[in-house]
Length: 207
Image (tube, rainbow, N blue to C red; front, side, top):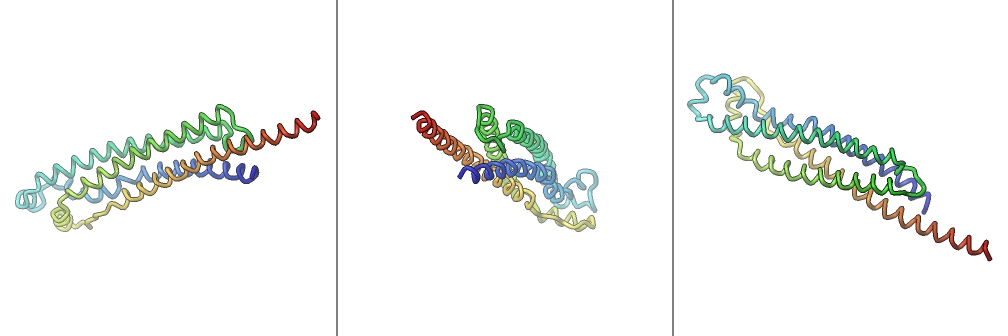
């Protein structure tokens, strides 16, 4: 059991770091689909294509798309910064040797606790905000944007795939974080058994 636990803690610490890095990579591209969708509205911001803006009454939709995109961009910037922070925090697992130490000390408990709280906290925040922007995305007048895109000779793009990948990334992060907590519980159990075994040996030697 001891060897299995040691192997597991090495794997899970690496998995945590990889999951945080994956969240960072996803955060860099999460805005791509959103920009591609609302870009036709930006054309109307600078140019009225063949009188289309006035005839279709797109003023409201154009404003909504621009507002939606800039608000989402603010969220995206925060997501990038928080993902970087998660990577830095996950490195404490290696700095404190939580991945390889035979016995855990206060620093290992602190690193595990800090990583767990940060990962779960940011994941919940990400889930809430992604769900919010998915809901607001449905309010875009896609049919009108598609007409503008076609008139401008553009290919219209309507997708929330990048948001769905964000769900996946932070879902994975929550899963591996749960395994990190499981590793800590397992470690405590192994240490107690080891200490009990050592106590029995000492008693035998003393007798």
